Amino acid sequence: MDTPFSTLIRTASHAQHTEAESSSFMSDLLGGRLAVDAYARYTEQLWFVYRALEDGAETLRTDPVAGPFIQPELFRMEALEQDLAHLRGPGWRAGATALPATEAYAARIAECARDWPAGYVAHHYTRYLGDLSGGQIIRDKAERTWGFTRKGDGVRFYVFEDIANPAAFKRAYRELLDAVNADDLEKQRIVDECKRAFDFNGAVFRQLSDEFPLSAA
Image (cartoon, rainbow, N blue to C red; front, side):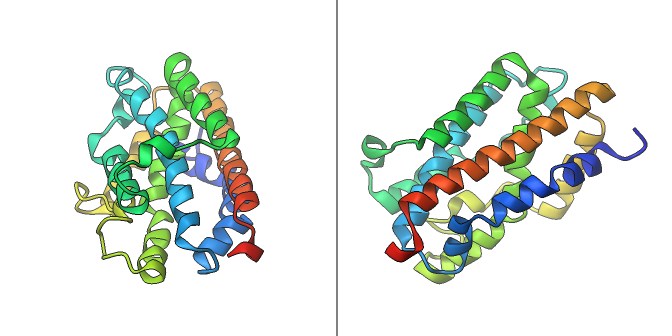
């Protein structure tokens, strides 16, 4: 491919990415029109997704395709659990439930981690690079809307303490994508899975919107 793969995967999934980002739930959340319990419920869904991502990571460290992407400084589970303890209290696990869309999303990630490492890369890219980019907008809004201490409990998920230079890290990540151990056909399958990942995110947002319609904010 003449076009760098990192560029191809970004441009090819742009429509799905935009659709997920512009969901009514996310628009209401970023617009300050939803209460903190909606933010907590969203954070809870992320916990199920990242549990699947990071459980799968352990088995992929030596994989020739997915292995280079397994970087502990990206891991989010500990931060998510600190945020949920702050948002929901120390007993948050007992009441944590995944939406049906979240269950499907996590199941697909687990399936890729088990059976198709290149597909796992698509989900890894969709989540972690998004966290380092657009996720910072959510952090800023959460801090200003609900009074979380900057980089403290409630927004730790969005704070990558072990990444000193996010811009440089993202450049290096894109270089990994460009060098991914896959032929052109497999790269196209990764792009298709990336689109599917954004569709999963969109489905989660739609179900969150059903739980938190604007009229109830």
